[in-house]
Length: 143
Image (cartoon, rainbow, N blue to C red; front, side, top):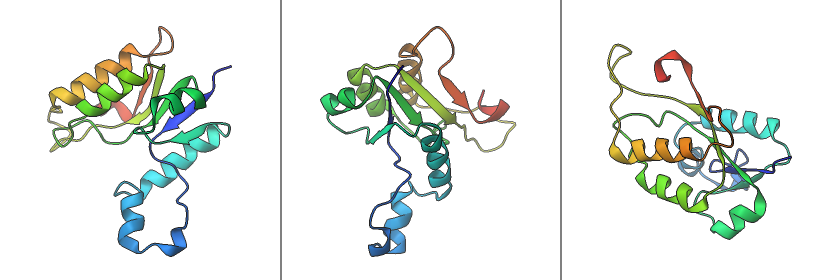
């Protein structure tokens, strides 16, 4: 059985009672809905380790053998995930992405993505654990 390691977005904010609202909001990634989404993933993977994407590679590999990424509305011209692509390639573990969403001016427009984000998608796809899809999306528009 695989040992999942959830990278980025710990659903548990430590010492929250010591933080002001601005810091707490920043800890959610600027969207409090992220906490609920991250918590749901953590509830389904109670044995998973929670680490940041920037954690030492040896620490990530020691914590698990499959990376789980709680994703958000990361597809759009507002993101450039080239550094994240390079980081995932260096970690070189199988990846499962959950909840990827797209953003554009309207549902009638095609999503525009940067080259870095395109590379990120290619790395995640390349690192799939088996022959099936490894990126879960938020609805038909993102698909």
